[in-house]
Length: 366
Image (cartoon, rainbow, N blue to C red; front, side, top):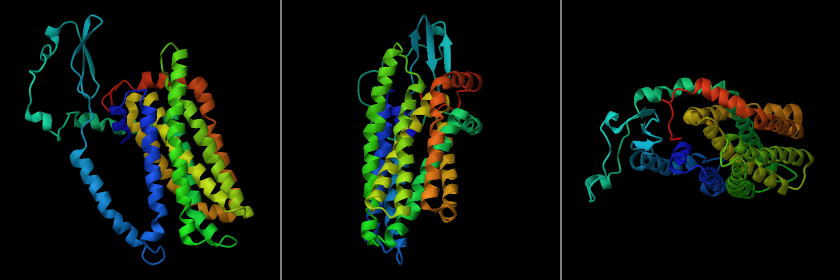
């Protein structure tokens, strides 16, 4: 989904578009979970919730398969600087000295008119199985790439913090001294929806303004490191969320702080997801697809592994100790952005120049 959005947008539009997707998807998910008590009894008929959503999920899968357009850009040959540039759908570039050397010669404008192809909704661009297979070794390279692995660990910790709050807030609010009804407890997800919604302008409009200003100072050149400020607010919000939640659960503060903590946490997760997507795809554009696999797939696997340790962790350290430690881990990993902003460009250029020559796995135009 993120790669498709990148294909369909220009570079100055991507922060807003990607932040919008992560934000609105989070809002929709949280709103659905907030009405769960009205859809099914969690103690007796919890399967009803899943049965209800079989239909929408099936419709979404079928719609994606049959109606989503292909987003490869097949570019015509163009004359540039005295030579002819030909770029394939898989971004392989060839240079020719004259139009006579170009396979198929010079493209001529099509005759104006209407044809059946104008109404075509199903198509295929031949990227090739060989190009697809190239993504798998690149996934392994991305896993050992420190500039990609860093954000994967950070996202795993932030998503793990969301699971930490999500797994325990119900038991905390249902137990004394709160003893809140289940319908009120479910409104925690509404607070999460509000936090996720605020991530849209914070991770979108703000980053657009920052990158534009930095690019203007750099004579119009936009470096990938200009997206690193996007990590500041999500990391601080995610760390603050678990600290507030842990202290509230331990000291039995007013329950409103649990709602506030989940709003901060949802803001941090949505904002960080947008920042990660922008960073890895702009830092290593030829590795966009493999990098997204590592950042999203591997980090989610690790975060779910963290979720199995949450209850033993709480029993050992208490709510305050467990969440304070998790918050400190998020801040520690998030601070890696500081040295990356100063020395990451040189390392990124070295990695990109040495290992990213093969463009067969590239799934988006430069």
